[in-house]
Image (cartoon, rainbow, N blue to C red):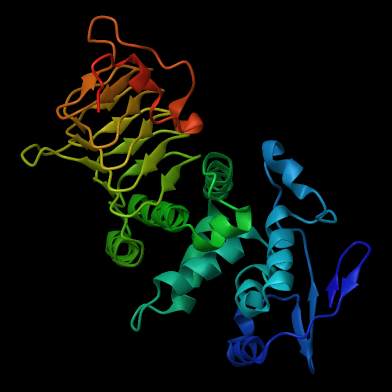
Length: 329
């Protein structure tokens, strides 16, 4: 039974869900979760507050947070996912717990147990409120910028770019705490499972969208600002010869198209746009667009065209083409 403010719901969970929780370590069960014959009794504590600009997604949620409302809706409409949704979202009292549980199951192996990873993720998220703030900002980024993102719940469960980014934040925290062997082990699992290779020393801002995410590589001394969108097969790498600070610095609001490669300790200015497949080897000024191999500024070096919008949020990949008089098929 789910006890809401004004309604109660009786739910008969699938047999696999009952068995999963029966066999689990009792200490790891959410305190609100109890069993009586064929009915789960789950008192739903507050989940998390959505940021102001996504509160409109609370419509018809009965005062509950968007993710839990979405999960209940999906469980009702698709019974095959009921066990998955209950164990991953509905049985948890906070975003941190749900995310820790999900990442632990995704990244575990025969020798790196899910229970160990759950504790690791939860302790790290709980000890640093900024990690939770960044996770909420990343959820919003995916929901707002990606038209294929159906819901916050869909992003939390299925977007490997989002999951890889949150796992990297924990690995980075461990790196700054000089727990480098564990940080590197986690980095390896993230790369194996999500096909996203971000060195744990790399600094990543908030409001990040790794769209599709497959093949993203970010080097050790790279820095990525806030509200940046990066598509699949993007490399922020070194030149292969330099040591020390040798990776790109990406400003706030930057959009990097699919397959783009940025090499060396170069700066991509705030609000810049890097076209798909471009190879960037020198600095790109703020609010400009660089395309090609090697990349050149649209409008020319002396008077480059300026981006009026923030590309990292607008996700506008192709408007610059109208300014290319020699673009012919």
